[in-house]
Length: 431
Ligand SMILES: Cc1cc2nc3c(=O)[nH]c(=O)nc-3n(C[C@H](O)[C@H](O)[C@H](O)COP(=O)(O)OP(=O)(O)OC[C@H]3O[C@@H](n4cnc5c(N)ncnc54)[C@H](O)[C@@H]3O)c2cc1C
Image (cartoon, rainbow, N blue to C red; front, side):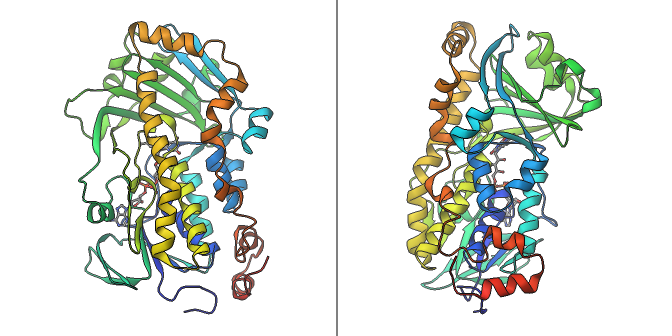
């Protein structure tokens, strides 16, 4: 065991996405040594835009990277839902000072790479985090004390515990739960980045605009200092065979032919789209076995309609590290406690995401009913309905006041050089 860490063998995190990196950072801030194994040749993120709700920003604040991300993100004035057919407004949720006071943070839209990059940088700076690329974990074995992990290159690694943060096609889940691959939901999303110079002035809004309509919805918002707009068009396809890949603007626009001019205009601005088949799984009552557990999309993949998948992975990270800290490194006990804490909340988000499928994609009379339900709703009525989701859970809010926060977010940020940081992590826990 190094002088400064609490564990002799590292905890291995399989997957260096937003969830895996947040988990590594949270564990390191509780003085656990972590090795992140990422299958790709470099750490990065597929896709462009990411909505960062207040509960996600609260996790990022707790981990010490929130300020960086908020500087790069657009902190939006409002969320706007439009009827894609009539082009009229259906509902507006103001995200100004009242919203921020209620939920402790604004609502941001960011480039994924900015969120992932801030976590990666913090992990690179932390002496207790080791990062490895080209390292695909394909199976594990465990006895009472050790988890032995095999990579696709045939290497064997020994760990005190394994966290499967390897995404929607998780290998660790395959072995742990054995419930096959995630299931296509019968919908695809067409994604593109449009340079801001191509976006007409009257369509350049400082917030996401969401158009909903029969069997499809479209959202777009600015990212990266307004240099680009992230466009995502979701289309129900039924049981038809669909694959991930490049798609023409004509294909993406086909389902929107009868829509109002603005959404059609936005769709016409991208020269090419990337098509992704949307997948999900039903919630499960267990994702832990002994010293092995799951986190993020590996544990609870969801459709993106509620824009909370990354937020849930971030919350998982803090919850897992809190429990491991409280159990003083006793993984079996801590991982059980972590899943008990997280299952109901993450399952509620999975289920709520799917319910939005019906609300967003309503047609006929259902669409009129939807519009009438939202019409006239006051901001505080919206806030009350969103409070369960946007309010950071207690373990996130209490992260700063943890008695074991030596080497924590604030310390690590303020200690610019490695000697100082090493010194900080060698001190007995006290803050
Ligand atoms: C279209 C779309 C829009 C979305 N929008 C939002 C949004 O606005 N806000 C939000 O909060 N969420 C959003 N989400 C959800 C969010 O993207 C995911 O929930 C989140 O990225 C999950 O993070 P993760 O770290 O669990 O998994 P991932 O980001 O998938 O990361 C998994 C990592 O593991 C690696 N890996 C995989 N297998 C192995 C292996 N065997 N060994 C080693 N490494 C491995 C992968 O290469 C990858 O780097 C959206 C999702 C989609 C599809």
